[in-house]
Amino acid sequence: MLIDPGSKVLVETPTYLGALQAFGPMEPHPVGVASDDDGVIVDDLVAKAKDARFIYLLPNFQNPTGRTMTEERRAAVSAAAAAAGLPIVEDNPYGELWFDEAPPLPLAARNPEGVIYLGSFSKVLAPGLRLGFLVAPKSIYPKLLQAKQAVDLHTPIFTQRMVSAVMKDRFLDTHVPTIRALYKRQRDAMMAAHARDGRPGREVQRAQGRHVPVGAPARGRGHREAAAQVAFVPGAPFYAGEGDPRTLRLSFVTASVEEIDTAIAALAQTLREELVLLGDRKLAATPA
Amino acid sequence: MLIDPGSKVLVETPTYLGALQAFGPMEPHPVGVASDDDGVIVDDLVAKAKDARFIYLLPNFQNPTGRTMTEERRAAVSAAAAAAGLPIVEDNPYGELWFDEAPPLPLAARNPEGVIYLGSFSKVLAPGLRLGFLVAPKSIYPKLLQAKQAVDLHTPIFTQRMVSAVMKDRFLDTHVPTIRALYKRQRDAMMAAHARDGRPGREVQRAQGRHVPVGAPARGRGHREAAAQVAFVPGAPFYAGEGDPRTLRLSFVTASVEEIDTAIAALAQTLREELVLLGDRKLAATPA
Image 1: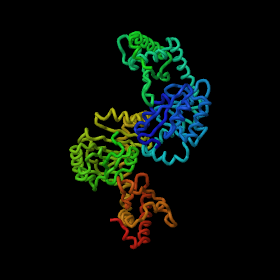
Image 2: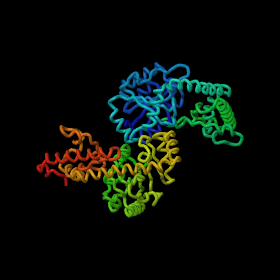
Image 3: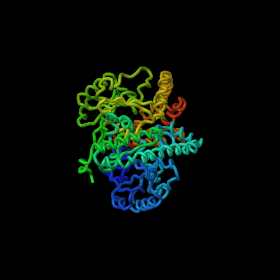
Image 4: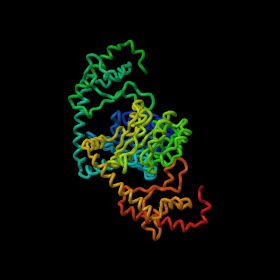
């Protein structure tokens, strides 16, 4: 509804790969806004806002970085977008899955007329249902419904009713705290393994700077069977323009604490070996 | 996957409105192929095949006309499309719902490499599941999967498993004959009501030729409360180019035999009155 071929669409750096894929068939021109650990940088947003159709943001536990936009940044981004007349598409599939404290209020709560807010039952209930929801300004509803009907006629009634019943039963009130505790244990295991194994997160980054192909550990070679079992997503496709090949995304949600432990150890060992194999002769070819 | 902005796409005259709506966001140029009671006319198909991306066909109980492509026409269409290198998108949601005898074999059975065949559980099981399937040449599978993933990541696993269980139980073997018998009774009631009420199908056509707005009976005026309860779809949007305003689509599937009886009587009476009200003074404005 918002994209014509060539339309400028702003995204974070990096951003969610699935969003880039969803926009793709409409042939936009995605432009990455410079971002730090607090989210998009407001000056760069303002500089790139002209003629952009919208900015796509994941303020909570961003995919793929995991970062959360601070309260201060939210206020600044919200004000800058409103001043520029730039609509925000706010994607919040993970907001309920906080470990220590709930994230700040969504951008949609600050400027409801300027934000299309996307929610999902995939992360709090079941991804296999493919059920989500949106909250949007009333003015765009007729067009939204028309576009949605063209795509799928309607969302399956059966799964909508099922989720409605689950919500009425207040199942989510007990289920969400359960998965928060579960995921926190896995997150902690992932962080502990990183700390123990010589901060392979950093080594990955350094190794990739020396052109270790990110897919290499997953392909399996000789004695590296354990590392070959580690599934991860190369980071480059998560970028609007040219991706950063020194990055990868690791997930801890579907792996047990023991699997996380073994996997990070194997991955770290493999990356250390690659680094040694490449040696310093490749250093001259390292990108700036 | 098959449509770029401006791509020529061939459809029947008329064709399924939902297909035109599904193609719409990709901005094709839909072109209607002349059609008779047996389906698309082969000479016109051949004349229009050049540069067309595909032809969209509903050989069985076509929506909205209800016509079925004969065996002879299928053979001719299949041969002509193959000769022209024109892919066929064959939509068959209704094929199992025959009353007297099963329709001829699908076009996909004649030339599997030239046909993308679409099936659905909406009509034989439940439309609220939004579950269907396709059979396509192997060569286009990788692109199809990629495009599908961009749209929805995947079809809900829950409903897929449910339908798989229903099929393994052989529920459809008893259910489909049951709904065939049910729909046949309703179809017969609709035809009987048409015959009894002065063939309103024809009068609708004549009345529309005199510019009776097709939406009028559904809006309710004074003593026409009964007709105002009759839901139907205006026919014009089912056409690729300019629609024929003298047409409408009536459905008998969700109405009881008694409701069909009352509805057709009320609709016929209202149309007769409109015809009298308009009189002959409007006849000069009748489209050719």
